[in-house]
Length: 219
Image 1 (cartoon, rainbow, N blue to C red):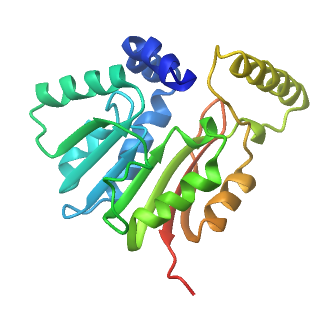
Image 2: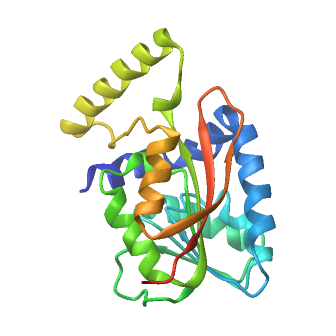
């Protein structure tokens, strides 16, 4: 089994509680920002939706949401919560963003919330996001940027932590983790043929960057 899938399956039952306990301010601000960017006629792809913690909160602000995650247990929880809330416009599916069922230029908005720092193939993923977006479509991301910390002691600690987690990922005990800086993250987005139209450093004990980018026309 893929290490990432196994890890997220394992923590699925405590995921919501963990997020709300550690990142409550970031969570509510991300939900608020995302709602304000959506149009009731939008067809949305929520990439790495987890347990639907954000997806269910924004459902009434879009026409349709295709929500995907590699963890079947996360998806099961998300489906249950959506059913309890009687949300009929979300299709939760265990899948990846490279699923052939997703056609080019088929989404108005693609969300990548709390996922880019966990990917070692960001360029490929962002290229795929661009491919799936309609012309002028929005790419909305929220990303933990551990490399942004300026305190030398904190930087050393996080560098050690990053190295430790890297080793754990190599022996299949933890997913990949990248200590991104804001500038590096913005660079990945721009290189993916996007125009950044809005950024916000959401206040938290750990740097968190919310980015809104628009798909650029091909030259």
